[in-house]
Image (cartoon, rainbow, N blue to C red; front, side, top):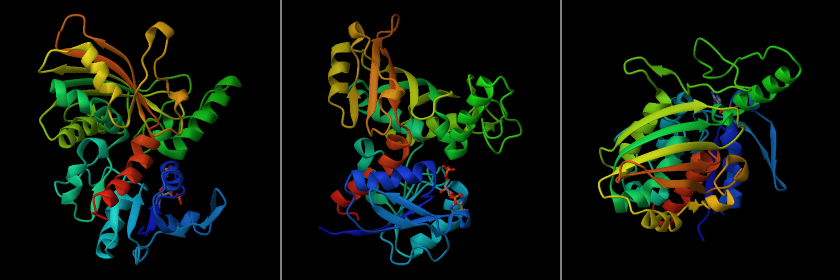
Length: 344
Ligand code: A2P
């Protein structure tokens, strides 16, 4: 079997660490693995299951001889260094938002639109975590019932804001338990003017606001990326909320469809959707919750029910470990799919 020289850009971050784990766990055929991060991490040792790696500083020359790179170091890093990787002949799977809406860059969830990979020009974008789990859950339903409109509210973990987001929740929780005022430095968005405590709180802002239409950038990612992945003008209305959960995003998803909903058929489709686990047995109080699925690569769907007034509408609860299915696993799965399709 052919093996590949692999690089992970942002290897010391919350997603980068999971990318390394996924390469081993899902048997990505590597010949070598190069871990790249900022100058701050140069020389740092990272160990995974007995394999020791020394982190190197990302530079313009980092990609000589590299076959495939997985990127998760932020949009500005992808914007600055990606061109050098492409010029070096490296195939790049980018978890940042920088290239997602570029018409020359496929935006891929393998079980939904792997066909789009054929048109790549050296860069493939991994969608936003919230979009991935939603389109993965809805894909078979869309094929059968033809979804016209989605209304989604998200309950997003702090790890979506990286290692700093997780540290903030731990620290603030202790501050509150100690009777102190929690100090907010990172959330809702490190680059925005104000910061609010996330411990014992919910913040209805993920990413910065788009002042033109009063939605946040995260919400607009769900709107635009869903249209691109499903390759149709599907209507999407999103409300994204940060909640005091360390890891794993939940979504309340409501869909309106062209065909009337047959609930038995919906259950059948969901139970045979690749990458999706139907986890729905209300008699026994079985429904997906984030703490059940940490480190797991599937999308879990429960609380599936027809709308009481609209025969063409369905609601459900969709849960995934966003560092895995929403980021690292989906990226590595794109790489595996490209190998299967003879594109790598
Ligand atoms: P470092 O740890 O050296 O700062 P997270 O989103 O979890 O905070 O992770 C961000 C990742 O992106 C980290 O691995 C971080 O490395 C990396 N990173 C941030 N800025 C740069 C940069 N300018 N060049 C290379 N890697 C970067």
